[in-house]
Length: 336
Image: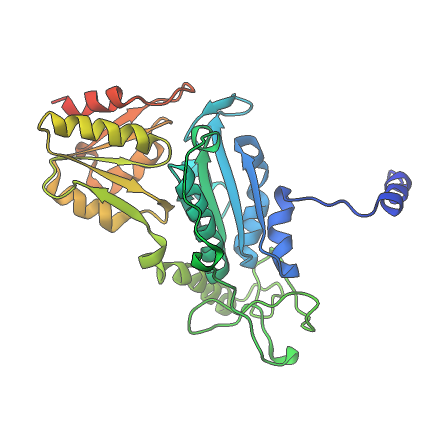
């Protein structure tokens, strides 16, 4: 093998590397007691998928910001996109729960970043904040709350003796307590399926309870995790379901349509995953059509169609690096 003498000399002279994030920074920092976040765009997000899976398996709280841009590959490096919706849910292999949030303004980006950290710490899970090139480069006025007004959630710790501590033990909340290395507790962590002590296992009576628990802890929190806002949906015959930067065009289109006496409403999704099934199902019971504008070829529309029925859903897609205009969405609203 290549001798690492040069790297060793460099480390002795300069000290160890200090990475602010990267594919491993998010999963590793929390074990030292830190709250960790890393930010990237599409290609970097692809490279991070293995370690996002590791964080899901080891139940490591961390936040990953993905500023979506045109793809695949190098694609359109400076153009907006919403093409990572399905990747944020299924990019890493295997069954796993995940929380994915999406912002449509500067203020929402601030508040959802705080919320992403709170969810990650409360549920011991990676949380992804999906942005896009438009929102990431946007400048808007907002009122910053005082530190005292910002709700901050800390991870669940423990006061049991070290010899009694199990990092993946069953608890009433389904979220096991987490302690940092260096606090006198010694335990094992791995990307392999593991028992309550963190050691690899192939026993079915340990694998199945773990799988049920990690999904159940998210399912039990759906009431607070799934966030959405409705405007004019009561009595609406057409409902536009939007997220991210597309919300801005969608809201303008809905207002123009209402000025023309169309009964149309808007649903803004702040949480992409878990998907807001109950909300979409309720809206679909009274609306004749649901319009889903996206800067992709119809990724979230697949979920809306699954819940509402394919015949009710009208897709409005654009994936050429430009935003959907209010006029394009308005044309879909007016189409018979």
